[in-house]
Length: 598
Image (cartoon, rainbow, N blue to C red):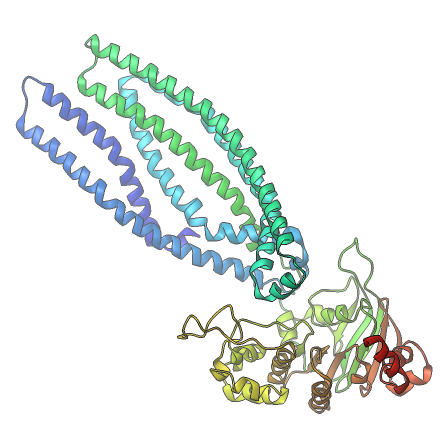
């Protein structure tokens, strides 16, 4: 990844790391030679001047090249951050279904993947360059120390072995702790969003939830911090013991060098280079072990990034999938069984259903009967455990999911209100024509929202959000918020923008609309659906009575199907639900309702 992010930047950073590792050793040797020459009875002025100049040049490079190193590191960090985000969200986009986004463990992994991917340069790459620099310095000082005392060199190196072992163990402990507290971090972020987001502000204040949510947030933060503190305590004890061992080793070395100098075995320059070498080896090893431990811990956490980026598709897609044929005959559910996982009950149980091309089919039933699940299978957000969904006789598992969905226009009850401009909020219905303002306005006109959007402060360029402001707008001015019914019309405009699709899915399209707006909407939709294949889901049975076929679902099975008139005649579940809704509009029900309201 580093090489792909910036090969020249990587080479430059490696070269500077090598030079930075050489400088301390070179400085120590130049200092030794200078001191030995100064203490010599026959000093060579030319040599002294050369050594002094060498130290001066080394000092100049030491103070100037780090600026270049920081610049290269910053450029590499930005490029690696961009590459990591591109790969991560590219991998997320390859998940064609919804199952992974409904799995808490995957969401925890995804959170860590996003964090470690964005900080990979700071926590892995740049520390790795630091490891290289330190390794070169330590190697140089080890060679220097060996020339003076092989025994002392062995003692210093052996004293570092417990540090290496301890740092590896601590790194694994810290990485495991991060995975363990990830759910707490994600949940505390959720509570923070509840406390700060406009989407939840009304209910939080109306129900007095602020203090309750704050306590929940702080409880999760405290639990996470307690886990971190336990690791910190263990690290403190371990590092204290290791530091004491290092101090004892350095003290023994100092006693040895002073004794050798007093006996005339070592020169003043030898003392200087020995002290520098011992300090360099010990500090270098401490830094090296710490950096390697940090990189090791980060690599363990980076494993979550790799797991997401390299994850297998959540829905199997053939290497050479079939193109979605234009719908000519119809869509068939053939003995379809489905449940969200093995621990949950069946949501659909042996559903057999045929939607003829050009006809309008309505799904009705109580909540939990399987209506929305059936739509999810049709859009291939999931695959059935048994049976098949056929598009003109072709199993949709043999079709590229993206190609299948390009044949479908849909509006869902929980339509998304994007923090985009009005034009963009409609244009996302078909991004290939997002720049065509005429088509966008035509779609808005058909959905009955054109006049509302045109009269906004910036017209169709107005931000439909208070989270962001219009480009160039004063910071004190925020965007415009639409009502629920207006958002539903924006979502319908997305459907009208995809008017050439084979199938139209309308899942509670009139949710949030008043009675008059609902009537006008369904009148427009009937005109728009005429001669087209459509699937309508609605709890308001008056909206589905003109469908060519009405299918009643109950407990995951089809219990009735037919036209409105046929189902009323049978006096079954549909007739019962229709009579129940109609009773509220009968004159004899009004006094009871009025009394209840009073």
